[in-house]
Image (cartoon, rainbow, N blue to C red; front, side, top):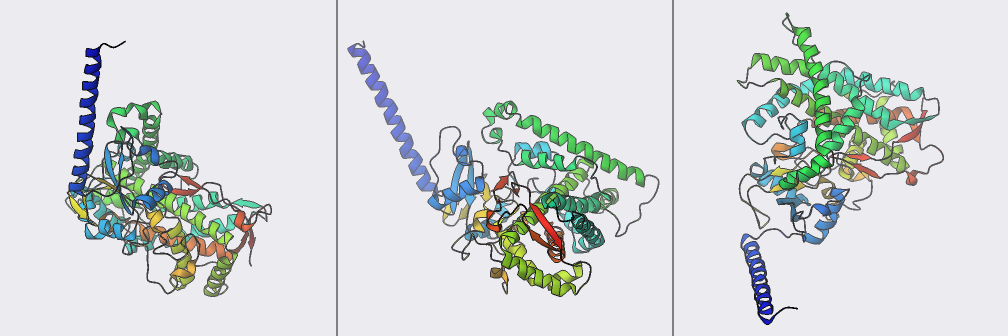
Length: 500
């Protein structure tokens, strides 16, 4: 039992604590009002809003934005994170204030996976990033270089069509075939040959899964031990080593072939050859090392294979669910082909409905639903709110593509919305951002889209597709598997009947 003096002491202590809490709340409110920060969802001590990301963060953030608005300030651990969920907010970030939002935050897992973030995607804004992006645009992904791989793409598509024809009416795993199609094209373009005999599919899947995992230590440094205890860091280091061993072998193979000779420069060069030439000539005055070569090639691999393959699977899945759209597209490609064995790249510019189907797929299923985080380099006024320097910023491309204010029937697959419409996916129309925009937009759009167009046009031209085992169109499983890339969870199994 407490004495009177003890009760007084307890009362005094409780009163002091209450005053401190009230003062803290008042100061916090005054500070927030003074700073005029964007609205925020309630947060928990220590973890902030981390628990609200869920298994599908793009959907969780959509629900939160519907309550708190298109510009929302969250706290992942002790890191402030601005979430943009409207075209207007995205435009402010990627155009109006693009330079101020051009940095990348320091992220633990990408640092492990991609040579200390020395690639294009994750490197911080600055001279190094400008140089490596310039190398990519000028030497690797310019239009003439992309066109130089035309025969590679057409040959690999023809080989895939032949494999589908040999299924003889049995069910075929189109997801698997599309993965190897895209992978073979990327390998031949980047490395000079295919690597199907390797465990590349499994390695890439591990890479994407680890890259998309939430690292507790990134947001709460003193809890970094959780990433070690969960095995995330171990997995990241293992994937990084396995990929480095693979890429080191590739680069060494190219160096050995070139040793003692002056490598011919021509259209048959692969991307490793080009990078080694740029490194040797040092024409830009920018000196880079072996790890930079490997980091740039890893960017091409991860982005070029995983995202394009995922988009192809989503597109054909939606066509199966919408026979009318499939028929309209089939009529267009058949008319353009004029009885030839396959659609060629020179035919693609004339296929307006094909382009509309692809835009509609990218609207509903942007390959990376939450664009790679940016970070403010200085204080900025955004849509009337004050955003402090050092704020991480995420653009939810998935929710923007389904914004009912912008899109009529936003959840419906309706390619006609893009017919006679100038809206494009190249980062200038902020209602459609599958590849991002501004300085940090994807430099490989042309490489990805032409592969998408050619593969889709030929599969639809050559085959009538149906779901096996009596599955009805609308019953096709469209559930998602989310890492950093948005994938269809179940493999796409089809019955493919040759049309000719």
